[in-house]
Length: 151
Image (cartoon, rainbow, N blue to C red; front, side, top):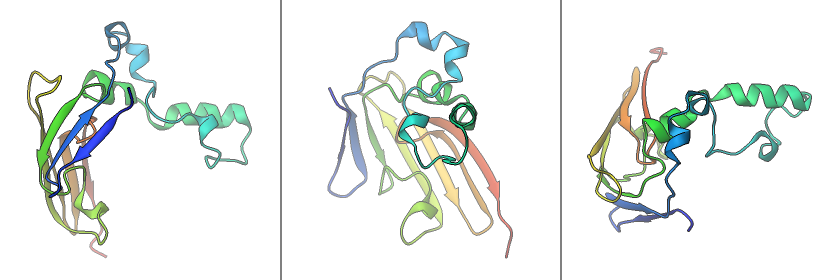
């Protein structure tokens, strides 16, 4: 079954279905935590450092997003089905990613479906700071804190 994201008319609710659980034996393997099983491979990214030899592209690709499986499947819930409720557009992680960019808070709650416990996410984008913490609408767990120059 393919993953499906269904958005409500107002954009403040979504449902994610069709995801398959990652096997527990993988989640328990610390070596697997460093991999990136859900994203494209270097072979699917001809745009990534095309002038480099293949062996170097592959090595750097494997190092560019360390702990993706940990963030997505061990700490995160990217292999689960759930509902999302939050500020529209609910799939947005940072308000400065919108067109036109905005400042302010973004939040959501992941609940029900395969989840036993509600998962929270909150982010803030201001003129000098961008931060987030929690389970993003996609299921990734993460935290970020960036300061920006006033210029």
